[in-house]
Amino acid sequence: MDFRGAAAKPTGKPTPSLAPSPAVVAQAEARRAQRRRGALSQTQRAQTFFGGIAAIAAALVTSILHTLAAHKLRFFAWLGVGCVASAALVWLSLRFLPIFPIEHVEAPATDHLSSQDIAQLAHIEQGTTLFNIDEAAIEARVKKSPWVARVQFQRTFPNTLTLQVTESRIDCVVSIGTSTTAWYMSEGGTWIEPVTLPSDDSISLKEKVMQKAKELGAIAICDLPDTVQPAAASAATDETIAIIQEYRHKFSSEFLDDVVAFSAPTPESCALTLSSGVEVSLGRPSQIAEKERIIRALIAKHPGKLTYINVRTVQKPSYRMVNSENLQPGTGV
Image (cartoon, rainbow, N blue to C red):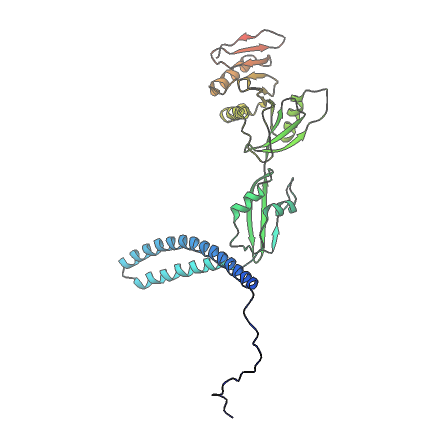
């Protein structure tokens, strides 16, 4: 029997509606919108990156064409174009496709950070590959720990990323006011963390700070005003600290090797202590090279006899000698 022309006969029963409910439609539309946003973001990234590649490739191709056309070697010119285009496509594929996903993150422990600490700070998101990791963003996250100076990245194919952390070096041990808690400061002028000093009443607070600094191969900074408010991983920006750092940057390295401590209760009263125990009143950071010259000249003229030198005013330096309570005028020579 031929059914090709037969028409469907009504059964008399109502046909159930196949239209989705409004809630289902709304959910589907939300999923489509989310996919469009994700696709747009990925497309924008690809367009931005490809634009840079294209610009470089165009400049390279133009140079090749001009050079080879001058020698009537257009075949090799177009061959070069093909090679550049192929290289760009390969890089784009590696950059934006889920190739070589990171499945293992290795982070050797440091003196103050465990492997788990570093991995948690890095927070490598699932789906990140060895080719699309954002090193700058990862390093910024790891540097939230004040102990981190820099981070190096090593890729081991097919799926391992190693984070090598270099710790901040303690440059200064800093005491504020009469507090028995000092702070470590890094070479970059960043507060690291507080440290409790020994509770030994037989020595002064300044001596405790200098002892701790000596143990660490650092320099002591004492008697800072209570207005200094350290916070881990933040920059040390107080004026008194800036004055001390200016002296440190402008003194000669040979002279600094003999300095064991600085102090600055106020910006006008900055001073230093030499390894011999001589106290030197510096004042504000002006004519620093001349102040150093006068200090060295006075020490050379009175070896082992000085206890105090004042070079706040280089035109009128003064000094105090052993077993003498009177300040002597210096010659400045």
